[in-house]
Length: 260
Image 1 (cartoon, rainbow, N blue to C red):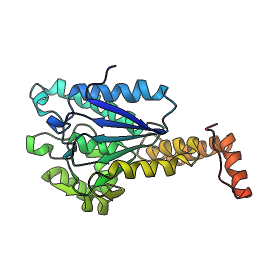
Image 2: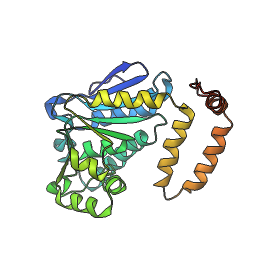
Image 3: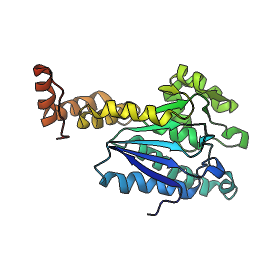
């Protein structure tokens, strides 16, 4: 696929994905969703050179300011169902991606933008960032997982308030409530995300992948998360990486993991 709305750049073992519709504050239209789906289902799984991904928005105003409302005007109940279903599938691909994905939120993260950020494994917010699910202002509800993931991050009571009022959270409140991991000055979120990824890259890559799957299992009501942990713990102890990590600890040196 030729990417029109995503700009891909690489830095060491990191792929930086920039949502690039600045004239629309990077709003998610169907083309962008198709490109995200292709990237995380087709391209990235085949590219082993990237150990982590950063998602950010083009420009200084917005990460993603929402979905493309002009496309919403064409929806009816049936097509709205399909759009929501497809959007949740895309964001689930990101959430379950076996390598760390960090959202570098450089401005508005509203509606679908907030949902996209929440689908990432971690969020770095610049000091001017704003988060919210304002869909009720249009007479609809979030459709890409917002009603579920917001509760997971900030709890039922506060999430219900924000979903019903459409109010926004600033970066400080988002940090206090647990929606974001770190706050940076304006223009520094990608740098901080890179630093965090480089720290993660020093750990066992197979273990990192298992951490992602086990954390996701906690929120999957069809999965026994404790059993999943037992299974994945057993799987990691049978790897060469574990042998290397254990010997490096005993020998007081840094481990050299190979992902095997």
